[in-house]
Length: 125
Image (spheres, rainbow, N blue to C red):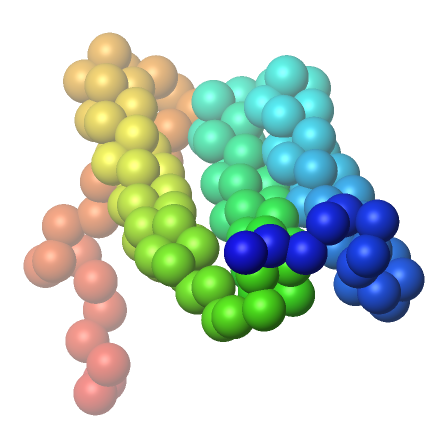
């Protein structure tokens, strides 16, 4: 049985509200970065940070609220955080590599050339 919203302690309400505002603000910053940054490579960076940190704050607010309101530890939101934290950077890397491959195959001069292993200077020399 859950506690009515009006009966929650004020510190819980303030903490949950602050975490929700922080999380939504970070997510909003990521969305603004997606819209405002000029190149594709810059655009994919802002939303990944906004998503990771924003979801983290919102997830923490959810854990605190439902743990206090339900009078028991609610931790299944951690799975959401783990999945978002694992999949967001992987998606960023795959998108960046696909765009880099496309730009190199089109001969875009603004993209650095591919460095082959034989071109890397030996660390011992």
